Image (cartoon, rainbow, N blue to C red; front, side, top):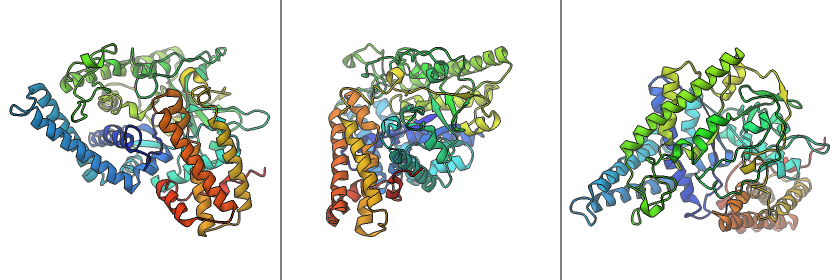
Length: 538
């Protein structure tokens, strides 16, 4: 399971946070993922990956402004590699055969990405993923519209609108209804005396399954895991209170008791081997160093060397050595998968499920060689083992759950609870979100007869701003500290726009110029329905 998500970056800054983050992930993760799906399919291998694409990411992939920006970004990378080729040539300003080799490597690599995007996929990445789903090579799951932290929302109307908007976006982009869902941050809240569990909103929208962490299924505690890839490493580890062992394991899927929605838990060892910075494959010293870039071109010319090596002491990167390590690491991972499932079969007499889930951006963006690793693993599983790769829906069709389970409050954040999103640094955000939720409910009831026109447009835009305000990305980025100011400004901007729009509607005085300016910036979810925010009458 590859979970693909980015915040809404459109027209919200460029660098170090903003559109360039989108362009980098498109270049290094999403387009290379399409390439390996295509190459495997040409070999007669259906990858059978389950790929989550959050609605807010799909909206950005399909946006014309960002399509043009990605083309320009790739062209600047190609020009940077060409300039470095000249700079490192025998007659250049910094002659170096090793750096010249790397500059040529990057020139070829960026040109291949550009050609894949503009020619092979005709700038339509969403359509390309849809194509492979239609072929049966992958299954695409959805999520809440803007990746909200579902358990901390105050109103059921917000939950309803988050998931309904996400479903509607999926249908528009992929031409069918989704079967599965990635709960944002794997954040789950069980039912209590006042509210239903999160699965209610999945079930009511026709979703059949979601994913969770190993400890949620098995009991006990989370494993303290260093994820020094992306904005994970700076979060303090405070473990959730230990639960008694449940006697269950992640080798099967389970139904939830209140609603017939299935849940699958991540296999702990299989995830650890790839996620861990200290013990996992991406920490190998031969792989490319993410953080060190050339002062002139911004290209990555160094290898990790070791996780303890200072940036100034990093050694030059060798694509050939890295490719060799990919082959060795994929051999090891395939062996781990085969042995794990073989042992389970011998012990139980039953075939077992091994579900591993990761952020897609780990592969390619943070771990440059990661997509080649995925391709090698899929090919070797198909050609050399008895392991069957299947999508989540295919597994559930072949092995429907036979047991029900009750899940605790949980997430895949550090410690396994909600602390990453609700803590001393972020607690100020939630009353603002909750006030906005209730205000949206009130105006949705007050203006339920509003159709088109300026009032209808303002209501729809207010709905978009509330969805964006509810994104889990803002408290996450505040907590990790790597983009605290940016996330705070984004949060406040969406709240201000929301309040301005509601003031217009409630005062029956729509400033069309201001409304049009906001619509032009935050243009996601064209079919969002403000009526969705009306309180439930049941």
